[in-house]
Length: 147
Image (cartoon, rainbow, N blue to C red):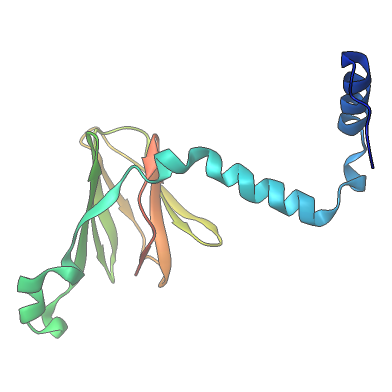
């Protein structure tokens, strides 16, 4: 299909027609592609916190018997924001510095649990599901990691 967009009026008419198309005329694959592209709008914030410590990867802890390890400790930090988390069978405890808002545990299927942060930045959650998860909070979120 060839268009004659030599004038602004013709181009504006074509854009008006495109924008006024009813939503049910949009092919489903276009809608999915648009949703996927929309998730990239916050990629910089999402990559804000990189794992700087994971007790599972600590060589000194690796030397000890894994059966004695009771909790996994993770630290995420970047640009003045730090999230420390301890994950055990009993649940998740953590601290967000600076202390603001809430922390949400996210799974691939969506938000799993949200906990309010107290004045010291600490929070408590129930036991985490197995598999890929990440923590989201005001101003950023961690990388995905496997529990």
